[in-house]
Length: 260
Image (cartoon, rainbow, N blue to C red):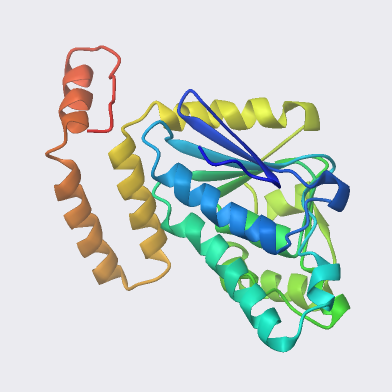
């Protein structure tokens, strides 16, 4: 496994944990963090010992946004590259066939909120805060926030968050569907790991194909989505895991899936 400067990456029991590890900067996304995040997600996505990826943050923040000091020093062309690389890193999560869970331990602002939205679903600490404060800087969300937020919380609420730049707390994030669950801070990671272990115990190929099919639901017509679902089911049916799962069900035993 590659070594990272600003990330801590661990793998255990088929679960990879990526910890954004710049606590002195509230885990702000600079060029190096963005590059490392894309590399880590890509590497873990290709690792057969990984079935689920969890992303969280060290210290008080999940990710408190992009690195404003670095952004402020950029010329226009370098800024365009910075934004493109940020979008590319977030899209790597979409392309990864492994489920990616955001375990939001604190501030998820700007690029941090966009990173959370790029994950397959989000679980938050009661201390978590969410927002798109970019309008306070003369900017707006550029790592995919204007595209993903409306798909999860609706155009109206996404617009209000983006236009006002105001933060919302974890309870409000749960109410509007931005997160699936909210837990006390000291229970967050145990709760997320319980979910991750459940997913990791299922048939990996079926989980991967279902992730791709679900992603397509927001990007294509119902007719095209159903066709993709049908073909994906036909790809999963001949697998050894499907045979194992059905045999285990019929014989009332626990299935042992191998990703084959």
